[in-house]
Image (cartoon, rainbow, N blue to C red; front, side):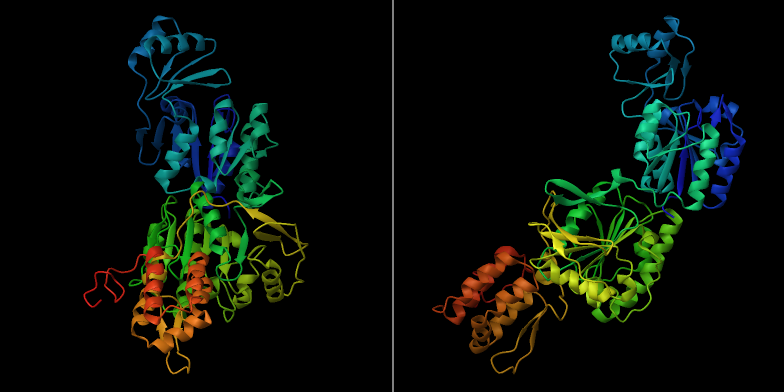
Length: 575
């Protein structure tokens, strides 16, 4: 299910003339029994609400005073969410004959046309306050306090996310409230402006509309509702934006090593995290060990426990990188097989995480894996899988793919490999230019796009390539001209160390063949360093010792190696 929270306004939404609609109450009770969390978000003062509404315990929390107050009807605790206006304001309004005049814990309220007097009093007292209107009601609140801020406070208290929330209302003060929720609905008696701007205009008025919405939510009818305002930007096609849905997406990003897969992923991840979506990145090779704004669990010496991962994910503000660089390649599918249903269970309970991102997905779900415990990407919100080898992925994982992004100079080859693995016809690729190709739904043609890059370019792989443990297929092997050696460099630090000890014939054998630049380009994905290494390989006049030193200097200029002296360090005692 996409949504696990329903937040409703009170007056003229859940209630008519101050009296709650019994049909709506019964519908909300069914939602509560199904595990849906219920929030009441109202402009009324709390005492006023409780005097007319007999079912406060139906709701998990109540936001009163238009976002100024948070009330727990079960614990009967009440917390002000802002500093109230000074008493002088209410005194000034009473003296001016303003009536009715309500003074809550945070809000000061009256009705039109007394807004003119209210504004004059605020100006004369030199106060920084806002005036909010709702169908003739006039509410004075501190800056930034509204139903949206109150909803955010309630969700935070419960450890829930706005991206799993449906909100319903009817008036001017419900605009912010509906827009901050993933899905905003308006009852039939709502203001025309609210019905025009909402995601779902209901047929029923007031309580009947709430009951209608509850029925849709319980039946899962809202899961497939198109919400284009939440789509994430991927790129541009002739200047026009191309966006992807943020729910139910099974996205495959594929292409050769160093072709830009992580550039695509980084751009999407930056935008998703920036918009409050909780992402879980399973990182088999330590590529995201320094990703900003995300909690990293695990390192080369420690594999994170699954319970540790789940505990961190309890709060939706925490996106997580699960760094598996310390786990042997052969053990990664078993770890992921245990992790996946636990994360799916967490989402079923809390409505988050929203995205599961699997780097080197063929390490986690190789072709030998026949069963993946997911019915669809929607079981985890959305799933993004990154791989060099689409045909090396589990067929069960490939069946979840409904969109493919191919990167590199020949996207046709990547898309053909995916299509073959899925038993589909390879698509033609249209468009004259672009650095990626997007194929939607496995039908029709793919089109070239220009990727919208991340705002801040991430320096990739620095820790892993410098001192981590690269997989066997990406490590460098010193073999020599007669293949007598097999010295594995698991990272750049080891590469520099081994280059000190190998004989000149071995060093020159690989240098003259261009093996060093090829490894750097294809396994590290560092085209700039590869070009510099290739220039060094082409210098036939340089002796072995000089080329070793120059290669070490090139690496040290781009990567921070461990603070241990080597034979090429200027301060090394042996030089």
